Length: 354
Image (cartoon, helix red, strand yellow):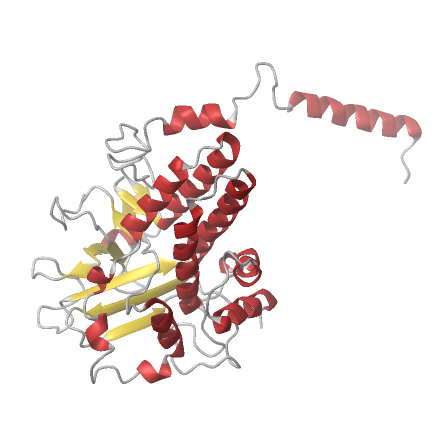
């Protein structure tokens, strides 16, 4: 049945009325980005922040609530990679609009200092790769490439979660590296029975609750990274570089670009192969890799270098973890291209998904 001209006119008049009813008010005008930024981020780019959203070191909390349920229980004291990735993005927008890039640099430094474990916090990796324990090294060509580029045995990726205010009392007041993990013992465990423990376990009073006292793995470190939000940080750095270059205020980017290239190189550990999703396959070749990013990657090792494991901890490869834009940046933009041609080619393969 066809609508008559009169009925069509009535229909569009109704739509127009609905549009007016739900239209965004323009009088008074909506606040600008800079007004919102000033009201929310006032005094956040210095120490001793007084904002409810941030701790005294200007680290953003996951939530204001003191009881928040996600994949774990958060009593209002945690920060994840997600919050810091958005903080860097907001500061990139602020730099574009205001032309002031110091807050952006502070946000990056805050992220790097608090989320990326230093080599001192990956003790034993150098000893592991230089002794008889290194039986798998020859089967890990990615490690060899990265070591040749950066002369470091540690992995330059952000950990996923920190105990921002030392709520669990795992750390001394002087210790600002507050990496923690939270796992359920098994699939039958509820969120409420999951326990948090420090990522670095050196002394007897800092123990993984799921490792027995007799275990030789007691003194260890363990980190987990998230490809989705690591990729978002790379995107933010790309736009910050583009906008600051257009403004001719990009001198600060030189050092930062070297670091972001390094982080993107290490993100290749998120790429598994068609046959294994749970374990990082040291014997995988370019032919059997699917060049898709797994969501989570874990690496852990013994303090004394007796063992070191790398594991893809995602049980699926989801569409939300894929970032063709990031792959395009890393394989086509000269400011972001790796010094290793094989790594550049891997980025191109990720775009094609092959």
